[in-house]
Image 1 (cartoon, rainbow, N blue to C red):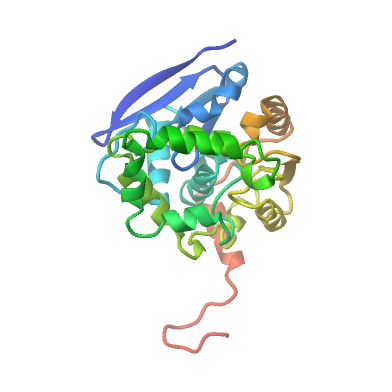
Image 2: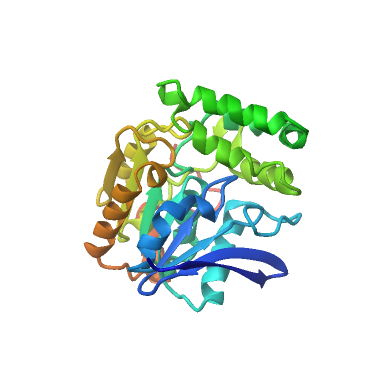
Length: 311
């Protein structure tokens, strides 16, 4: 199989780790919150046989730096643009998982001319509902709780508990093994602060604070694939149907029995669905003029400042 290599670049003074390999059309895979590029390992080498795969560790994640910096959705989006340009890549198909899906959607809004296709995988930022655990972790002092995982014996006990619960045949525990994998990376130096800042940029105690449903018109002429696990305990599968309905020309694939990580629990099917989607669609050719036209179509009225607006 084609090898995918680990690389590091210094961009705007910050360490940016990424994986890259293969040849052909560019495929940018963006991981979720508290995760890293390793999450895509079950599918990377196969995808690299047909595409140039670029898989970054977001700032504050994986092997990338953890500075005191901006961890907002637009900031992550800018970083993806910078990495692509650093690598000499002007256009790509974006595959975003969880938080990465929100970044992919924001990328289309900010840099439409660089997007060929969009693939949303159990993506965040569709509507408000999200796991109560994430809501709780967005509360003040969550960093202290996360740092406690570094205390002797705490992380092994937490991981063991997740493993035991994962044997319970309930939808709530379908992703416990993956959660334990992600949990193991949280106590590292600088990670609790970066995680808290990332989470609070998109989630508060009442749910997700960022939604893409008011901006999906931007992607109306972009080929879109929506992939979701039917048993996702973190972001409910109902979000997949909402997103699909807002993009009538999109393709929806629900993986029965899968949770929040369908590309890990069913890698063969995921690769088949993704390659079929790419092979069966023409890359978008968006411009700022297209974005302007879509924005004006989506606007219902235009009045003088100070005039009464419709209710």
